[in-house]
Length: 587
Ligand code: ADP
Ligand code: MG
Image (cartoon, rainbow, N blue to C red; front, side):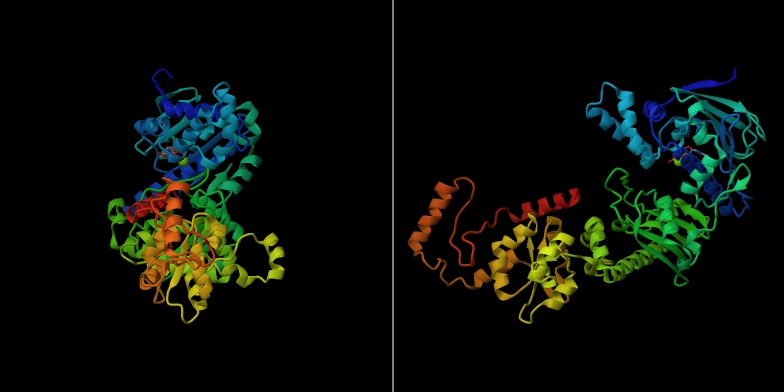
């Protein structure tokens, strides 16, 4: 085309293309998922724009045509379409956070010392992660020699974008209408000229059909393959909970949540008052902010797609859920949300806050019920995602959720182990379950002897063994008091926020001990067998000879029962709190 202009890809994009095109990746078929999801996005935007103006968007469809003789894969949508500027912007630069993260992770791989055979080393690493990240539109170059994009925003002007994925792309005008080389009247048509070696993946109807089944079964628009519909467009969340199988729910969770795992818990609910809601929500089984597919949301984003009568209002809806609930995935459809609401007013609208409050509370209630029903499964979940609940307790200044979250906390305790198992069973039990049972604060309180006035906890970062060996535990054990074991400093921070449970103060065994000591000030400070003089001499010897510079002082104590010595008061309180904050943030 003589009128075509040539443009260079942004450097980062060029690098991404390099990795993608040279990759030996086996799941190349993910390009189908990426292109269908882009088409579906364009249709969602189009539907929203029309309905907000009270107009009929007409029938919105994704049409895929494969031709094994011409070796082409063509995907068309009648969505929003792109102008020439938009083609250059959107397809010439990396916008997508997933692609950015992908390129960054590949940079790290290179930095680790694969400098020599960069291309092949990269491709081996890429093998495992392209499918996890999804690299958007550029994934089409995995199977194509050339990619042509024809698009129009419905103004009678057609634009063509074309590239061989080799560092540059060309832009030119084209006709609008049906047939080869033309842009749809409104929308986008993408033609992949499939590589000879990839024709069985990308230009075969059978292969594409099975890929669509795998990845695109929940697209909310008809997806046609060579003229035949391939998907069920019934929105899953509008069905009855009993009509949705676990398998479909899990696949849907991965589809809407961009997740790789299976959900740990599912909450499918509907309400008609005070708001009309249909929701299908999931608790992931893996922390979505950890691992390869990790994804950080912006502080006001949620993991929920907000719909109104099956029209998408906003993906990763902003201002909907309190930030500590950002791990929740799924769909919320609320008829009371007006279609023509702007993104800005949506974000700080009272309606959205009320809706979010209902959802957050329902989800917390659901977890509480599940914890009762399946305590072990819950404990497993809590070990991975409990950190978010702790964040909710510590960061909830308005105290809207704190009281609901506290019963969800779990701790190991000094008693938990012997209580559930006899000595005789102990050996077998160790083999089958290596994890000691977890206790809620409610359960702990229900076991408290009458004379016990407070809930006691012991903080140790050394795990159960160290906790059980702690001298602080001795006095409590002697009284028959159970003690909660806290293995992370963040837990102590949580305790300081909870302060009281069921009318009982939460008290660190360290502090409990100090208080007691104050009361007993007049009693002898010396041990049973040493006089005051000998004791002072021994302490001096410890401070100057045995541990010089390693302790600030050594004093006699009456608080120990079976242990000879106790390390105490090692940091000023302010420093300790500061360190706890840091630990929490890096947790
Ligand atoms: P993402 O979808 O995550 O934004 P992609 O690489 O998949 O990233 O797509 C890049 C951009 O190209 C999209 O954000 C969108 O603006 C544009 N785009 C891609 N496909 C289409 C399409 N079929 N219709 C309209 N715009 C599209
Ligand atoms: Mg995309």
